[in-house]
Image 1: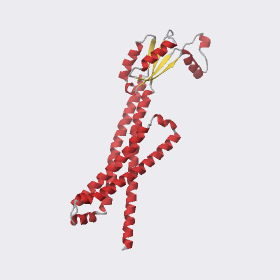
Image 2 (image 1 turned 90 degrees about the vertical axis):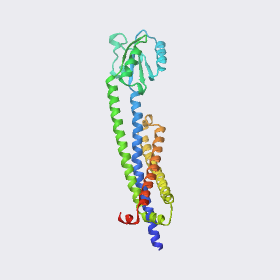
Image 3 (image 1 turned 90 degrees about the horizontal axis):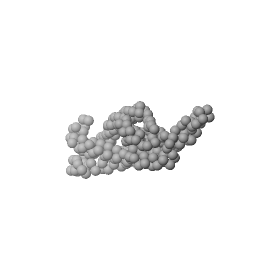
Image 4 (image 1 turned 180 degrees about the vertical axis):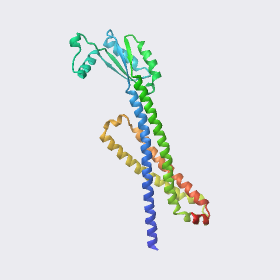
Length: 292
């Protein structure tokens, strides 16, 4: 009798460990998908905000006037950041890039002072840039405005396609994850179907029968979510050590949302699956239990 109890206890323990591990692996996949979707959004904003609009200034514009223009443009709703590049700085940068100084044989500095305006992500599109460029050309001292319109269109199109692909993958992975966890939890409840029927025969209410299964599923979801967050956190810190610049795209808010999503998925999916599985066996008669 004692041996049989030990065997049942060890079998139940192994079943719980197997269920926790399989649920953890599924939650890791779901957490990765949430993380990639949030990172893709930040990456999209980062790429757009690093696309620049070059405002070329005339030779008559002094340094103070250029800085005043910078200050005025900085308060415009579309400006994310502005860099002022003087004629001398532009000459130094081009000389370093070309390896020669064109002013030596031209007799004058051929480069112009410019403002490098980085747009906010919401304004980095063709329609917004057209009216922004028109507005910038109205400022006195501005000779021309240049931006890479084709590059911006290409970036927007590619980021849109990536977002759609990630969204489709997220929906598919959520469905697959729900199915996998549901089958795993159902197998766990299946092994206790006769215990459920016995409790039903002695007059226990459905709520009373469901309660220990739901409590077990809740602890299982929390344990699996904790393990999944630990695995995802370890992977992220390895990535951070390999590429410290990743923090320009990923913030602590995204990490918190990812961890919260893993816990919500873990608790909700395991609890719902356990609830539906127990209800299924509660509706069955003794004959149906023996035939499945």
